[in-house]
Amino acid sequence: MPLRLAVREIALFERPLVFARAFRFGAVTITAASQAFVRVEIELEGRGRAVGASAEMLAPKWFDKRPHLTPDDTIGDLRRSLMIAREVYLADRGFDSAFGLHARCIATQVTACAKEDIPPLAATLGPAEIDKAILDALLRAARVDVFEGMAANIAGIDARLTPDLEDAAIARFLASRRRLNRVAIRHTVGMDDRIEGEDGVADPRANCGARYFKLKLNGDPAHDAARLARTGKELATLPYPFKVTLDANEQYADLVALNALIDRLEHDAMLAPVAANLLYIEQPMPRDVTRASPLGRLAAGNFIIDEADDSYDAFPAARALGYRGISSKSCKGLYKSIINATRAEAWSAEGGRTFVSGEDLTCQAGLAVQQDLALGALIGISHAERNGHHYVDGFAETPAPEAEAFLAAHPDLYIRDGGKIRLAIHDGDLSTGSLAVPGFASAVHPDWSTMQPLQRPRQRVSREQAP
Image 1 (cartoon, rainbow, N blue to C red):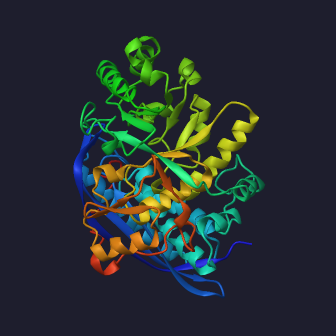
Image 2: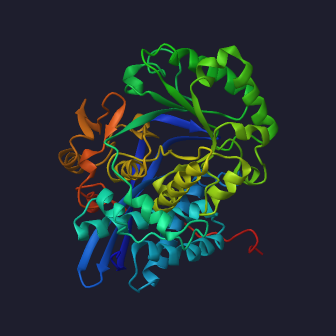
Image 3: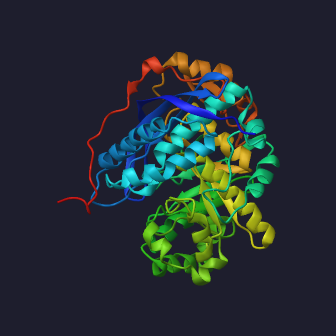
């Protein structure tokens, strides 16, 4: 029987995040951002109170790429998503399971955000971060780690939001879970990143021994093919086997453009090092075009959705269009990741491979990377996009005592290097051993006294409501 809880307090904070190098994906280049932090206090029915925490970088122009919005507009909307979610969760005073509370709040959140012209993907950030913090508090109160706790379904996940599943299927999936001891990093190559030579894709000091690579696309088949040919030539010099994934971040306008890229991958000998090692292509077209465009002959390949994943219905809808997979990101909701992994296992058992991938560059050292890494290790994701450390220098501007506390608590996950505390990558892998501690994958919390309250952005109204 899952434990019942009520949320009594939610505090929202942020801290600036300066990039060590520019990261360009799609039409946006990031050189700095903010990391949001959530602190939640829950009351467990008959068992007192507990505190939990979560963190996530606020990525500009990813959740919402509409051209009339500036990057600052989109960050403001993410802050509003968090603030609206705080109000929604605190207004629900009754005791329920952690998932039951999420299920009662998610539709209210999406509706409230729509009134401020915040689309569903951005709307779900607020509940995603609060849910992580609630789970952290719940696991700490129960004195169990996330792997043991979720195998017993401590959060009470059921099928009320997903009528295509049965409660028993979710329970069976969770009961079968065993922590992956290691998760391989997938090294992201942004559009402005070097390909050849020092600091290029084959430089072991830059790629940290990665065996998996994620290559960004810009939506122009000719340009992308030329860049992929150069990248593949470099990757072919690695002294070990490698695999690649491609990510267009919605930049391919339609199926015509996407077919042009696939034709090059299938027939251009210069692209053979990439094509022969390609695992899947992620979110090639805009989310609205995706939902209206069956893949047709392309369904024979491995395509997944990411930005189009803005509801519990997204994966079944994408599968019907010919997509094979979907991304797991804790910023989109840990419960949705678990539900989708349950679906993928069930559908694969029926015949025809479907899968969940690990995609999230925004996970920075500390709570964010640990919780997303643990989520992937729980649901069986063996390699994940995981080089936020490549673009942000370790713990960056995190106060030294806080970074030291994370190093002391998780010595298999961090290392002191060149005066900075960074992720410890072992032959291209991250260890998950120290994540098996009471709570959601962290033995320590950040230093709240060193943060600023989350900035209060201006509210916007939807275009439909505007006079």
